[in-house]
Length: 115
Image 1 (cartoon, rainbow, N blue to C red):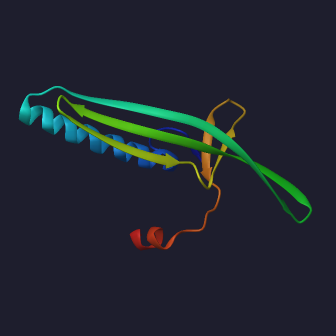
Image 2 (cartoon, rainbow, N blue to C red):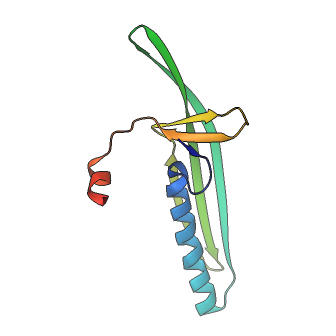
Image 3 (cartoon, one colour):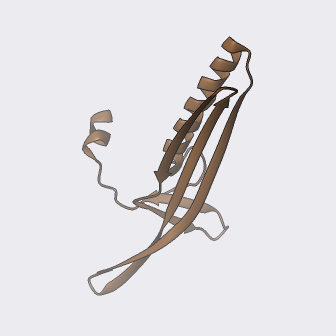
């Protein structure tokens, strides 16, 4: 389980897309001396699921985080969209800190190749 912040695994795709847009627009602004703008829109919702294992009902809440990054240079515009939240579980501890953990700990073929 890890605390929810921009460095957590759940928000990694959003952070990567934002960093790419930021680096690109800083480079373009320096090279062209034009003003650049990034707009970030995030929609957050949750969905509760349940399952029954060995006569025990288990419930968990998954986040649904849609995001959209708009890049703008006077006569140029680019948009990146993404969605994160599947297979993660949200929890709040006794200090009201928000944590997220992977719901399914199985590694994909791609995750195993990275190591």
